[in-house]
Image (cartoon, rainbow, N blue to C red; front, side, top):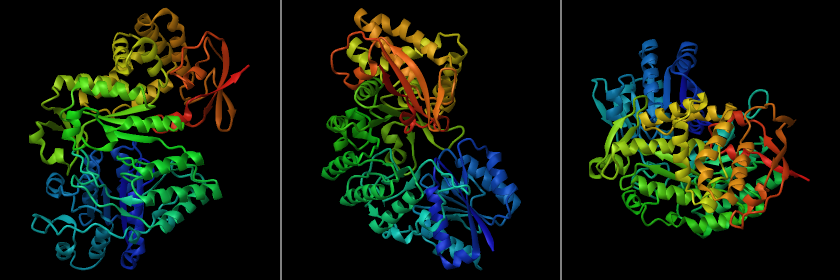
Length: 614
């Protein structure tokens, strides 16, 4: 029996790797020939950690497959080289959207890679493994559709494209087959969330995005019966949260049927509790019916406004000028009326965008939605921006420790402007998107005319002038983001702000010296209280002197006094400012935040909840 390992770095559950394992084990030929192990590595795993687990301490590996993205490309090339040292006959396979149709470049850069899978890989990998288990493997490669491979003479060859899988149910379910186990041996949940797909494909062709293949794709769907069985299995396993990996959930009647099934299953079993997804860009009748059903069932999901820009010029270059997603105000109003959360996404560096237009869009959104997720513009393979970079005046550089291409400048953005904006993006991510401060933005704007971007800019100036060790550490983290033009490098900063007790005095000093002097006297005390409310309700990573254990699931911070009833004011921020009234609250916190410090999707679940004490 040969041994194969399909390796995949993971954010949570390894769904793609699970598809491959389920597919290989369902095929009679490959099931006889291969034992398949999935190796998950979290973001903290080093190259040597992966080498040890995969190759140095493992039994002999005959096939090594990698699900490749830009941030793991270099490490996976090195692991393929090590695998070839240990066994020159090992078959090394790269797959994933980062390497699809990039076979020539990939094989030239990494001599240890044998095959690149183009497009969906489930059927392709089964054919590859059948051929590899038999005689004449090299001779069989030209007849396997959907691959780029290194021929015996060293040349790089690409076979006929493989048609997309029409009937997705030919791919066995990883969770129903047991290819992915949802609980550990001692019965604990193995993953924070369970990932499912209800469909594949995206009908749009946005210039920056691979999801639609830059050409648009017809959406194909898994069957309702399969989805029901997966939801029932999740319920039996007491899964709390499901995340759908769909590109545009809420477009089709089948999506509404899925929500009906989800509500029915939860009503019968009590689980799953909630689901999240990437919602349809264009919101139509189906979406709004789903919205009402979720509200009626008490389902809470973060509704994403995948806007990426509010600049007309940038929307034009992105091929999104006429998308209904741009009419976001009505949707936010409907969600707010129903007490349902929404957040927005923006990408800095799109051709046509300027710092002025980006900040204006940021301010507009930050005053209406719970958070704004901001990202640097990376040029992804097989997109319009990638293929026609010269037409957009893009000046790019490949990352020092990843395989993404970073935008340095273009016709509407200078290099210096790009660096300055990355300083802003750092604070927007750490303080705003990750909800270190959650409620100050609208009151500061309404009562003092201070825009969210101006507040963050003043915080940057303040931190830069401090000698406090935490301030210095945070500005060092900021400088790393600026120097690399990479907004992903913020985990250290998030750990600092949630584990350093000196953060609160710093933010109070910033508020007192840089913000409140711009506020009229009668509103200063109220805004000081709003900041204090944000600080005392920040998620708790561990119990401290003023935080005690309430029960197995919660901490509590007791007897917190305010000069104003801030929680009540924040429920209706458009009303007149309240009169002074000393109030006392206990603040309760869900425990376990230390495992999710870098998750902007989950941070709100761990923020403090006030219980008023009379």
